[in-house]
Image (tube, rainbow, N blue to C red; front, side, top):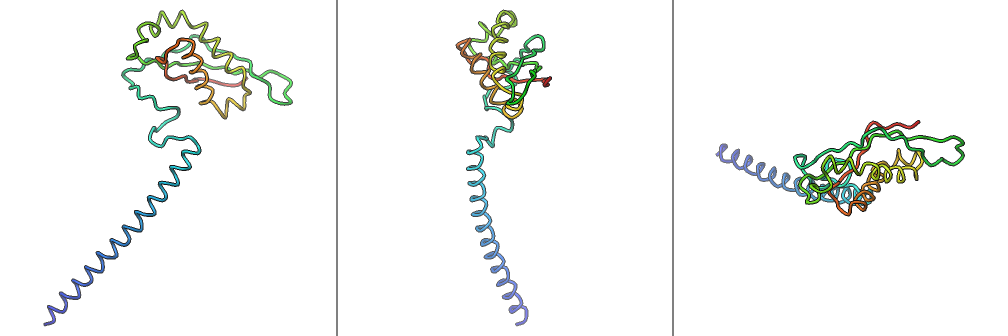
Length: 173
């Protein structure tokens, strides 16, 4: 008789445990969904994509299809003056262009010879874009400026085989 009573107590405790686990699971899942919704809303407001894992727009171009073209020579660009500044500020930068080798226009425009022939025009677009900004605007909005340069270069070519512009080794002087 004692064994049956003990078995019934254990069985009732197991059922209570299962019920409490279900309650906890449902409450945590509901809270998790609400938290995920809030994070998604905040990310949308800040214009951040949670699944891209990096900066800049997600392009879908694999590294195997990417070629990096470095603009020859370091560029020194005079920046727009901040309010109250009396002397010029310079932005010294190396610019990298990421090319999509699988794009249909790559064979026409993306070869080393074709890119070398367009370097002057590309530098002109870069200089005219960057010179419109102050040093603090560049520090705070580098991705936006790279995107603007990208759009201008893509408009120049009439193609999007260049899919990203990046600054490397930059400093202010």
